[in-house]
Image (cartoon, rainbow, N blue to C red; front, side, top):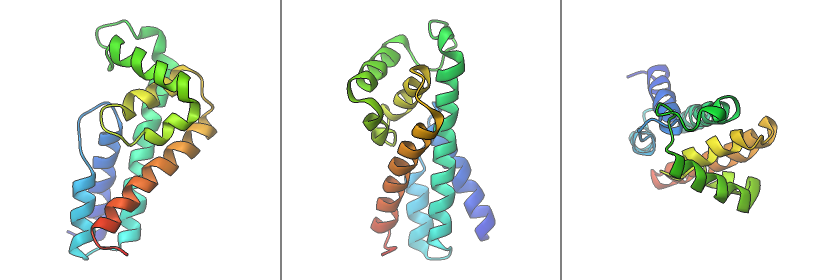
Length: 144
């Protein structure tokens, strides 16, 4: 597998993992860095970009489609949505630092869009969170 293909697969996996769809990108990043066949910094950038973009999709769903939250097709249950909204209202933008955490991160990013958090603020905090998580994965795989 060449570097471009590895980065595209990683980007896609990270993007999917950040949306409300089930996926896991940390293991794939770990393996790619561990093999030492690819530039780890490029892999880190691809994973972070994909994951932040996926979170941006959640923000957009919250921002533009929140009035549909009680419909059956809405991607987050009313209970999860209410819980994430309460958490976000309690901790504010700081809660976006938990956007990388499985199960709670996706609803938090959705709540941020619903509550009208500015896009620039959202992107800064989410990028810090996602990059930090992927840096930790790369460190565990032996990057440093």
